[in-house]
Image (cartoon, rainbow, N blue to C red):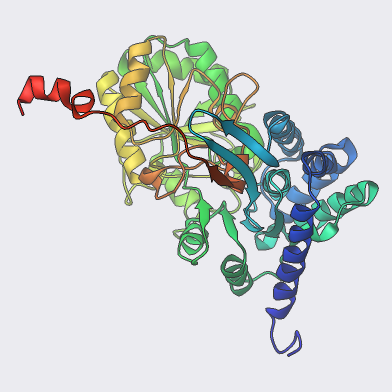
Length: 468
């Protein structure tokens, strides 16, 4: 059967080649080889001229984000990941415990199928490729339609680096253009491990394709500002985070909940930091969702284009970088309470901290459960209260949310562009996607001296309290 008769035959051939290459990679592998391949991919995207070309191509073809921030994202996300995996053992014996008699041998997954979004058409594929190669896998990327040119160019750069070190280019491939749901579905069904970042439709398909899958949930970040916060610092961090790459990140703030006692003071600080208050929810909703879908003239656009598309050119100060829209509603009938992928921030007012927590919880239960929330506060007990109350995997404290959630050089989170949301978000993982999710192991189990306890060793306290 030829390719014209069966549009999936080219994909099947790619997966077959990836499987053959992976088996050789594992059979002839070493930690040195795996590390070198990962570094080659890192340099393929981080070399300054190539980084700029990829950033410019991404903005040109997707219409999302801005070049300067994509350059920063490509560089820092990759640098941070390479730091995280440096010295990590992913080949051969990775752990030997004489007390338990168990030896763990690192084993690759095989062929990884990675579904990636148009918001980060170079950084996310590179992150997945580095993790896959570090752990002895091959990988086939399924980019979004608008992300195809960036992915193709990235793979050309990777294969050029592979040629320098004598590595097999079949280890890193992509779905042949034009992409389709059918090709992506076939990839998910025929690979050994699915990694999915993107729309919730893709996540659902990944988690029901029959292949083991790690998928991540939707973002809808809410940040609380309480009366003990450093308002100038909080406002500046929110500006930096909200505007980075034109709010393409799933970790970009979508709502801020401000305690009443400092509401006016925060609005003043926000205004000084480039945020404009626009108290016209009806107009913003009508312009942002003109036909029930997010307006492409607004989402992930530079500030001037976003302001013009929302009809605000004469209503906000010169130099406005984002807008904050006061609202009270939460749920499907109140679009501002969800993810907006734009320089638009929903602004909620709370009578006190407990009310702020209740609003944040309601927002997360509406959308974004399990992903992350933030807080600007000097009260440690309030951070703990939030962590025990909100259905979320991450509480970002006094930081610019976008930069902190996916790993920063100033916190301990793994560098990643994909955030697991746990059971709250319908995901298998509740941590940042990282190298461990690309690796499995075989355990050698040896006999050790018996460690069987007596009943009293287990039940003594219980018997004392409840009787036998």
